[in-house]
Image: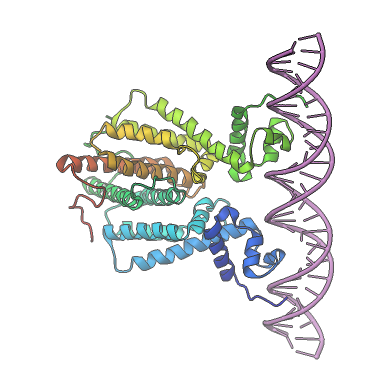
Length: 208
Length: 208
DNA sequence: TATTTTAACTAATTTAATTAGTTTTGTCAA
DNA sequence: TTGACAAAACTAATTAAATTAGTTAAAATA
């Protein structure tokens, strides 16, 4: 009966730790309550449901990750900024597998407020606007990067990659591929600034 | 009590349909049994557990997708083959959201037999070996493509992308980015055939 | 201090997976 | 053809976890 002085923060941290140790799937109210030193039903004073807790965990993860990215980008620009942002995400995912899983699984389906990854979007847009990439294409670029980085992190987490070949090299290579892609966009944009997103700028042996 | 003449095939198809309608998370033995016209416990004559069923569904998905890719690649080569393979995966994911989710979530953790995506790997290796990409780098390339395509499909499924900007254009752009990346590898390989996977071929405004 | 709200508790309910034990149905060899 | 056996269905019971109901103690505030 003594009060535990819990707040959203402590609960999400405990939930995150549990998710990292056990995986989101196995994150249960029982386990969480035990870790917090209360009985399961007491959790309902703080949390609406297990599903909602997982969702909150996702939002919490995006916030934390957003902070880390912001920090890492202070005073950095250009390609190097992109590399760093990608690396921070990758490291975060490696460090917080459970939380990251929540971030990838749950997304703003039932769209309550803003998208949880909005903050990340803002960062990427800022990076793009400092370059020769049109507003319209920045949207595409953001999607492409998110897909790659999140996809890679998930596959790595699930051990989908054979352990012999170093995983980090693969990740870096992909980032370089995508950065090169941006450069191609910029070149095309400088040549004829009216472009959509569509097909490649010709002359690369396409339609082979 | 009449026998339903079920086999693995029918059960996985029903499970897949349910997963697509409800999501893997909500795929339950109750629902599956109801759909098959039997009582839940009877399922245990065919299936070891719910978790195992989901895993089998994953394997089934990879097989099906593998077939579709093989079909799509008959008589096609080069960049166009890569484009088609990516598109087939993307379409498959759009058509079978639940099964695809299973394919992405569950991976060969507890490594029973071969990796479920091995078939896909074989296809990509064949594509690479027909090009100027070294065996070693083919591994990286495979990982990069898988990450991007699976990541994109997952994010799209989770409606993580704003609906205004056409999603397909983003996907295609990313594919072109990656194809361009392969071309860069090939160029580098032709220039100095001893390369690892690491950093970019210089002269692109790095370390800015 | 009195009142109200918050956060804990116990007890009960619900839902779903799973197990135990039984019966039916089909197959196959004597 | 028939009788035994295996496979596949069933009912009934168990277990585990989320959730709800109703109660009480602690803290905050008027």
